[in-house]
Image (cartoon, rainbow, N blue to C red; front, side):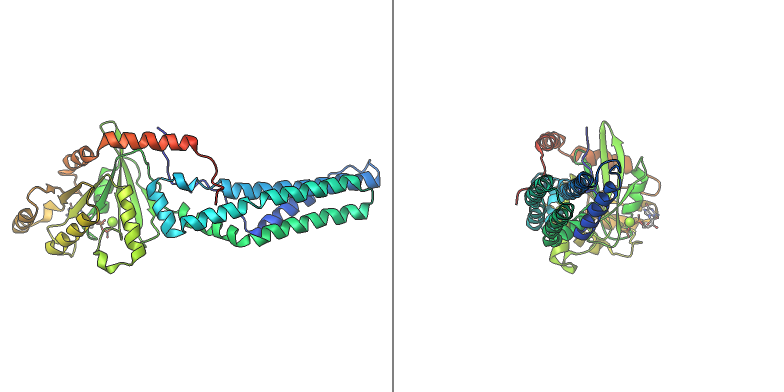
Amino acid sequence: MASALNPFKRIPTIMTADEIIEFAHSKSKKLSMKSSKEIKKVPRAKIREYARLAEFGKQIKSKLKESVEGFPTIDRLHPFYLELTEILVGTDKLKKSLGAVYSCLPPIEQILRDHLEALKLTEDAKQMKKTRSAAKGRIASIIRATSKNIDFLIEAKKKLASLPGILVDSPTIVCAGFPNVGKSTLVREVSTAEPEIAYYPFTTKNVIIGHLKIRDYRVQIVDTPGILDRPMSKRNEIERQAITALKYLAHVIVFIIDPSEACGWSIDDQMNLLREVQRMFPIIPILIAFNKIDITFPEKLEEARKLVPNAYEITATDGTGVPELLQDAVDEVDLDSLQDSIAEHVASLKKRKPDTSD
Ligand SMILES: Nc1nc2c(ncn2[C@@H]2O[C@H](COP(=O)(O)OP(=O)(O)OP(=O)(O)O)[C@@H](O)[C@H]2O)c(=O)[nH]1
Ligand SMILES: [Mg+2]
């Protein structure tokens, strides 16, 4: 099944207003060199001016269209991306800017039609030049007038294209737990392919997404450094929202506790974070795993077992206990409702068209 990775990745490079004008201008200048010397002066000028203006208009329109149509339809985004779009750039502002840039097209069309028509009607070479440059000037000012919107799209693309790419149709396990408990080690240990390194703009660390196959499912496992690894009270509102966006991504959370305390956090601290994560994601199943069993003193393990009687016990470094944990994690995913939501998502993709509404 086709997977939707980051839908903002395929947006082409967007030029600034000045770059678009410059680009179209240089394309149109190059074209004029080609007009044949065999033809008489006035008709040649007419052909040249007409071709130059038409080319200028064509390039401008295609650059503007590309910039807008490269964006996915905002209202049809997967909720994970929709929520992050809201936090990072604002969906309303994004829609407005897309609409504003797109709505430059009809007036540009009109100017082109009028001036190309005028070019056809005149026999005066000087007048032709004037007409052509007047049209270019008017088109350029339409674009300059919307340069703030174009700049906004450039900025939005930059921010959104760097979000992690997720397979919306795959069961997704999100790892949580304090730093150094072994999240990355687990993701690396279970990944069959090279894990993807992605950037999540709310942390300085890279998010790692591993892929594995369990029975017939392509499962992804997401390491969340700097995200689900410290108390919420230390965070601002935007970070908190960015964290809760994970609820759209995680089908199941594996919360890792290091009962050896080699990670530098006490079992109590880790239990507190666990309770916080449980509060934050009340409807997502959370499996608890004690990691580093190989180096955990028996009395520490007993202490942890009393707090969480049925936790999984694993050693991520050598894979002990890991297959059982993963099997059960995937079993926790409600695969029927996942299939439904995939079907819904695919149906919405079929209906999609460029977002030009504002
Ligand atoms: N002995 C032992 N060491 C482990 C085990 N799992 C992880 N470690 C070690 O613990 C340290 C931290 O592991 P990481 O996987 O980097 O921990 P993390 O949770 O990803 O840490 P952050 O990325 O900082 O959030 C590393 O030195 C690992 O080698 C284990 O099962 N046994
Ligand atoms: Mg890590």
